[in-house]
Image (cartoon, rainbow, N blue to C red; front, side, top):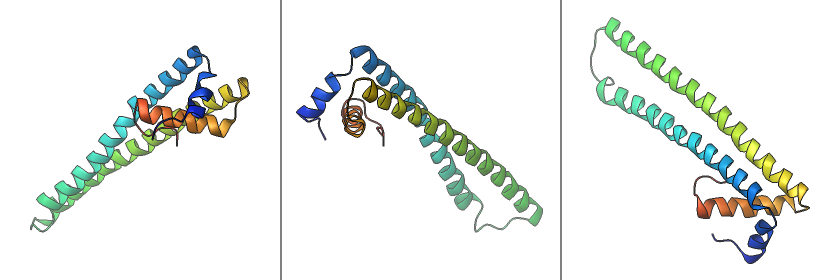
Length: 132
């Protein structure tokens, strides 16, 4: 997935200062995005840990309930973190998309085509999820 000449020409119409601001916002978004993977990995570790160490073994009822309540509490923490992180990431991505749209309006460019070109630029040069 590389940039076409049309997309490159379109991106060149945006001043370098504005492009640097957009790229910095995307770097900020990526720095938050990595925590999403940590939270999801934590959820899987708790589930696998329960299946390996607790499920299928015989425990006294009180001890089993204590273990289950503890794991339920840990899962609630992970789920709340996942929801909060999702909201933060959504707002950050929306802010970035709005900035791209403002640049398109400011310089008289096609909003959808600029978003697509900027998405390809981000995916090829920096990586991460892009703008979609």
